[in-house]
Image (cartoon, one colour):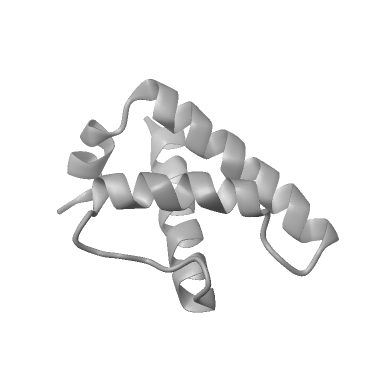
Length: 81
């Protein structure tokens, strides 16, 4: 599934929420050595809506990195539109 197909599934409200929480997480990680839990919860919830068959665990550092990177790439694509 390409990014354009995934983007079609995400509402404008969800996009704004994702962008907001990515920014909050970025600010938080610049001050601390961990991610902001409330932002991770939102991003993981959005991940599981998009990919219900691909479970990711918030306790797994690789999973956290993958989810953050995925949504960062998506928001970069949205900014190009």
